[in-house]
Structure formats: C-alpha cells, structure tokens
Length: 607
Image (cartoon, one colour):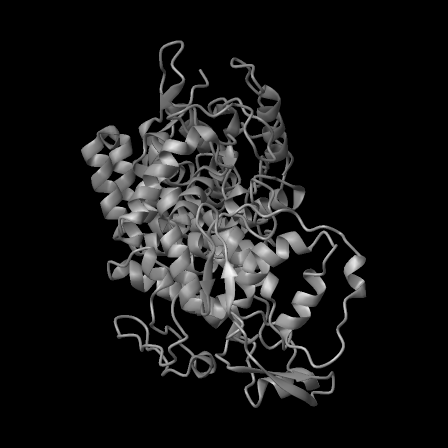
C-alpha cells in the first residue's frame, strides 16, 4: 500500500519536470504470497524499480495540468482503472492464465468487492453539476483502495495457485527455468498490457527465487497484480519533433485505451498481437480491430455501463422501501414491489439499449421504442405486459398508448421514495442529463414557506404553489423552465404506472379526494421556440426535434472517453459525433465513433 501511494505521489511531484524520475523504493517485508513490495525470506529486488518512468502529471486526484490541444487527447495521466475495469481486467487475466478455466474468473468480483472491500468509485461530473457523472472520472486514490489492491492481489494469487493442476496450467505443463520465464512474461503481458523487458523478467525470476512451486508463483502473481503498472494506465506517446503538440500513442498504449473504452477491460490475445507487431497503428488494421471488438459480448457490457451512468439510472431508490407504510400501501393498491424490483427496472432499460444495438437501432429509437423488456413478473405487472423471455425472444409491446420510449420506463419515471411523484427531479433528469441544458443552481429561498397548501391539492398544484410564488427567486426558473418538464409526465405515478387521476391521501392512507391529471404545459428548450405539450410522447418528440439529445450524447461521450470535462477545443469532435448520432448510426457503432477520432489515438506531447 505504501509503495502504491508513494509511487503516485512521486508521479504527481514530477509535475512539469520532463526529466524527473521517481527514485526506486526499498522493498518491504510481508507475508507469504507477496504484497505491494512485500517478500518472504529476505530481501527481494523491487520489480517496480524496473518500470519506465511515469509520465508527468497533475495530481493523483484527477484533472490534467496540461491544457488540451486540438486533435489531442488530454486527461489526467497516469489514470487509474475504475473498480469495474480492475475487476474486468483481473477476470479476463485469470481466464487467460488458466487456459479458459472460468472457476477462478467467476470469483474475482467477490474477491475484489466483498473480500478486499474495494470501495466503489464516485460518479463525478467534471462540470460540477449535480446528480450526474461517470465513475471512471473518479481518479482519487485513497488508503482504502490501496489496501484493497493489496488484499485482492494476495487473495487472487492464492486462488490461481490453489492446486497442482492450476500451477501446471500456469507453467504450461513443465517446470524448468524456461517455463518460469514464460509464465512471468505471459502474466506480465496480461496485467501490464505490454511485453516485459528482459530486465523485468529477471527481477520477477529473482522474486520467485528461481522456484516453480505454488508459493513462488503466488509471490510473483501477487506482486504483479499489486503493481502500479496493473492499476494505472501510463501513456507517453511516440517520440515527436520539437514543437509538435500531439504525440501519436504507441501501439500498446492504443490497444489499452481501445480495450478500456470498448470493453472496460484489457486487450485480448488478438488485440495484443496487433500491438506487439505494431500493425495496430495501421488504419485498416485498427478499424478491423474495432469492428471485431464491437461484435464481442464485452462491448455490450461497456455500452450498458455508459448508458447506465448517462441516464442516471442508479438514482432510482428501492421501490419497496415504503412497503408497510399505510399511505404507500393504499397508493400501491394491492401491488407490492419486491426487493429486486428496483434492479429489475434498471436492467429493463439497459436491455432495451442492448436490444436496439443488436437490432441496428439508433439513438433516436431510445426515445421512441415501445417494447417491454421486463424479465420478472413484478415489473411486467407494472407494464401490463407478459414477461420477456430474454435472449433472442421477441419482446412484447406496450399495450398502453401513453407508454413510449425511455422517459416512460419504470427505471426512469419512477422515484420509489414515496407515493407521490417528483416533477422537479424528472425535469432535472431530462434537461440537465439528457439534453445538457444549463440549469441554474437551486436558491436557498425561505419565502415560499408562506405558500398556501390548504385543501385537496394534486402534486402539480402543490409544486406550483411552492415554486411559482410571485416575488420569490424560485419562480423565474421553475415556472418557465423546470416545472413544465416535470408536469408533462404526471400521467405516470411514483411507481411508473399510467394514471388518469391522482388520489390525494392523508398519512393514514385515507382518500381525501381525487384529482384529474393535468399534463398540459408549454415547455422550452434552448434554441427552439416554446412548444405546447400534453404527453410524454410529445415531450420526447420535442427533444428529438431539438437535436439536443444527440449533442448531449456526444458531449457525454467525450466526458466518458477522456475522463474530463469538454472544452472549446473539443467542438469539432463533439459535432462530428453528434452528426453521426443524428444520421441514425447504429447504437453500437455510435458508441465506438469516438475511438476512430484522431484525438482518441494521440496524447498531448510530454517529451
């Protein structure tokens, strides 16, 4: 743990000193199995002292000290893997090392998350707006993460060497010095995402004491897994002439960046081979690799990860959280959400994305699709559709005419926190999250405490009286911008069910009255004239007509791919991706559009 944190600090202190190199650290003493710098039975040469100098960087907490240049990638460097990427990388490494045996690979997530207690990354929005962001932008490294890396390294190394069959597989069925070297090269190639030098092999051979038993291999694996070269992405680019701002990535750097974006994992054997022989730097080979990788199931995993975070699906709280509350139970009217209903609702949205991607669907169809992908009876009940069998089975269509597109799906429209809707939250998700409209920060204004909330009021009426009071600082933002985008979805209750009326209840669940739903509004999007809307379908069509959905996708792809906020220098790239989205490009190809950009294949010059 000390070595990882020390290495990051040394990298950060390098700052703009292009020639500075962190001093090698003194190996520590640890328990059998190896740790970050630990060894057993005496002093062992530090494997990390043979690593190349880390590139100059800003801080380990994220953000780059280098100003972006047109045509160049710019982000914090070195960037660490997200927890998801770390798990996926170790899973794929374990499968590859054990020749396709999935027994250990299936345990990796539990080892990292449950056993090592690796903390989740924080979803961070680089422009500091509330309620949205991406986990891969979280570049902070704390002691909990360092300790978890150390624990996970030892635990996984122990699993990989747990019996004679696994040891034999790791060594390729032999046990001489050449076999040990081959094992070191193979493991290092996977974990470090590039070939090891002869000097590095010699250091790890020394760490193993030249032995090929389980304990020796365990030490090598644990030390490699805990290495900064596994957890960090080091990029320097190719050597370029003085004055050139953009340095093309090396083949190995490009392969790593490509795999982390399209798969959230490491290069596989085929991609690694194209990096090793340098052919990946040829445009035709690179494009062929992108096409191949998009056809892999790992591309769907990464695609779902992006849309899950862009659509802010994890903001949905447990739908069963208030079961047993008299008011909620009366509102639910016999329906009882289960502990897994919330996750099922999120999965349903992502299944729609995957299905569209697999069936040549476009980004626009995300807002118009009318299929239900409910895999469980409890969720299908809310949709009033049959349960979808999944896989290649045809998904059933919604029978309710009000149900169309992303914004009417349970995972988006439900709130789960109570028996009433949250119009302002719904509006914020659409405006700030899906159309990238600029929203002013909330104002702490207490004058609306005088709002008259007497009588039987619908959710819309209560919200209007509180946020649209004349003379308050709230009214200008809420009346003309936020509230209409929430009210137009009042045809869906807090569980996401279609409704024509709202029953107003007291805390005991007693009905006080029934109010007709009023979803008629006049809404506004930047750059367009205000438009009268009466339904969710109208609202989604307005979003599509505006072009804001496609541009917001492009902006979020830049943030997601580069781990930073977009800048004016990204305007050309954003417009190119937006144009592809607007043309109806298949979702899967659209997700990969940014990897074909020159910015993705280069880095701001550091040497």
